[in-house]
Image (cartoon, rainbow, N blue to C red; front, side, top):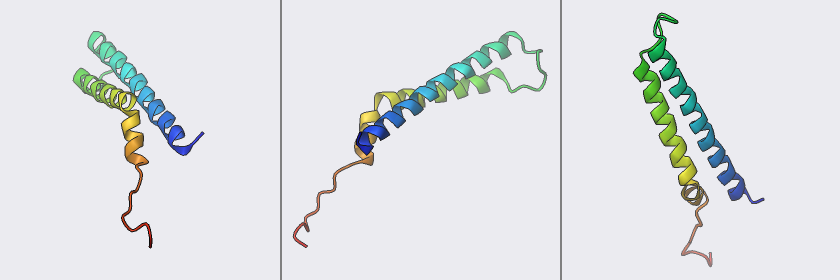
Length: 84
């Protein structure tokens, strides 16, 4: 496995972890909305919802554009001074 392929797998795994975290934040949002007196002093529900939306968006971006991220990280260097 080449380093670029391993990096592509790592980017997609991070994207999946972002999705997983977003679902846990979404579950926390539902718990806070339905049982807001369960633990006093919790953050408002929209904090959890915003965190879920951000994690979902980052995860979606990393899953959908892993090839572009890898291409950016492992771009080929074209040099005009090849005879030096």
